[in-house]
Length: 79
Image 1 (cartoon, rainbow, N blue to C red):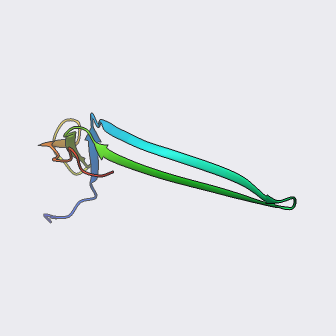
Image 2: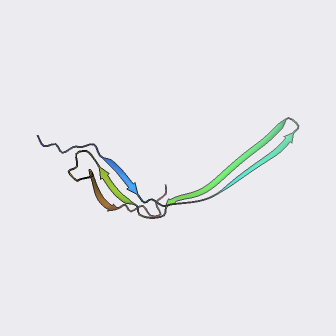
Image 3: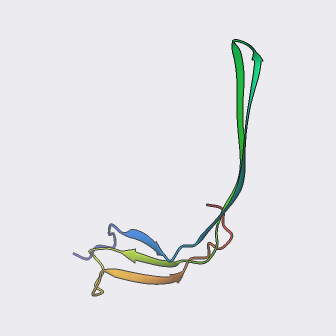
């Protein structure tokens, strides 16, 4: 019987990421018994390139069980 379904795994290789951000923390003693603490952060996390995309499966007939789909268009996509 020919089956058209298979369990596959998606693999991305050669991924470069760009992480840019700032963090801020403050602390204030309001009264002798009350202390306020605060924290904030802002960041931008993106892919910095287009990594290579492969699908792997035991059902594939290639020697290593993988098929290359070239590059995934992820550059500047938010992580």
